[in-house]
Length: 277
Image (cartoon, rainbow, N blue to C red; front, top):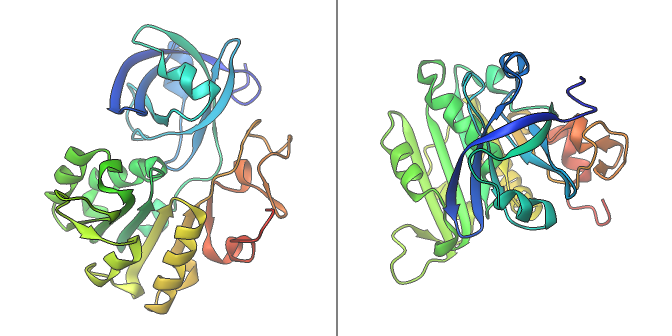
């Protein structure tokens, strides 16, 4: 059975409630041989399929060397994700993948890694963060910056606190609307760059979130001396087939499902913020 054409059966081993609208499914492929052969890179995604409901592209958040589970953090936003939200341990679904191009983690070795995320779109970088933390000796400083609209939108509060305790790791959080008990910075994500210990000459930046936010972050970093080649963006489009055949995720002359979802700034810059793309 092709990993791309037909879904493999997967079992839900654990369901974790992250927030009222966000949950994590930890899966195991039902066929032990298929599960043992499954490989992915942080930043890639799978197509998750519910019989009679449909299929949706979801980022993989687990570590590529975790031989036990394949984890996906999912936000309830439509028919398929609402169906996935009802699954419990022991339920079955279909899994196709992995698809796309992941983060340049091998290329980033020896230097600092800067993670910049906005809104609720941080799932694509969770695998990259965990990858670096579990291989700490290969990288320099890890700087994690997360911006949300309102302080109540921040999920994984405990996880951010744990990351902040790791060696050579800086965690910076900001909310446009902090609220009375918000203990972190107030403002849009770029305000965090004033507090980050940045080394433009030896850093790789990985970012995801709303496109407007990523454009603002790129401009800020380029103005601070970062090269365009050191900036990587996770682009989001409506991906249906995962193989560049259906055209739903076309972005200019590129297909996000195959040419991305991770792009370097120079290759995607002409397409950013272009109306209709």
